[in-house]
Image (cartoon, rainbow, N blue to C red; front, side, top):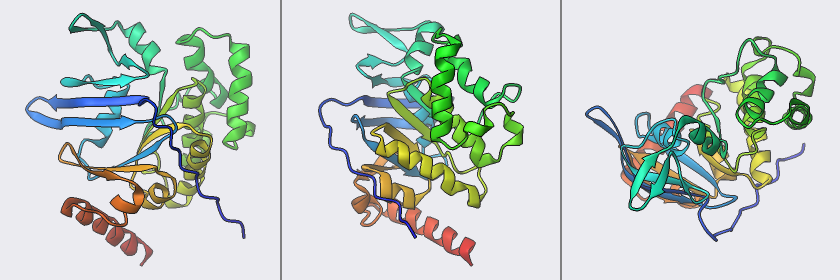
Length: 274
């Protein structure tokens, strides 16, 4: 039996590739994010843990401006996401400019969000050709290489409805990668999958981590976090409650909220096994 080699830890601490500074987000009277600040460095894998409603997914969506912050800022590769800085004021960018910025952050959602009327290959071609204006022939070659890397080259000409959930999520990862992002965002990528399909998606993500891709992953897969993450961030009630290496946050948590959360995950896992 072969075992999966551990993911080598990265240590590039030059300048953050993503900076989240005093990020707040409210929906009406409900404040979901309460002054969150976080730095992510090139090549890091950061896993975000927390209960439903803790603000994890909202923070991810603010990183690529799918949600507009109420205050604070997200800075990716030195640019304030969604805004142009002029003097001491921020001016919101036009949708086309935001789309250009968004290309730097590939996102994989809980629901696969593939276009059902397009084949697998056409799903990969859509954004690079339409958003970036790249020639289809050039993108097609890259797309096929990516489909090969996720084990789905033979599915290029089929429609998403013919694929399993795990296969659709692997296509979604390849679709995000074909935009050549600097950072990959994963929003609970395995939570909609049947248990037997989770492993195939996590293995693709582990390979991506080994390649040196910067990754921010919202997940409840504690084994994945322990094996792959450089840093684990635990969020509670819209704030960062605890952060550090997996050996600290997962194996030796400091806050009662983190301990309670991890205990509930263990109880859920034991119940499922029984």
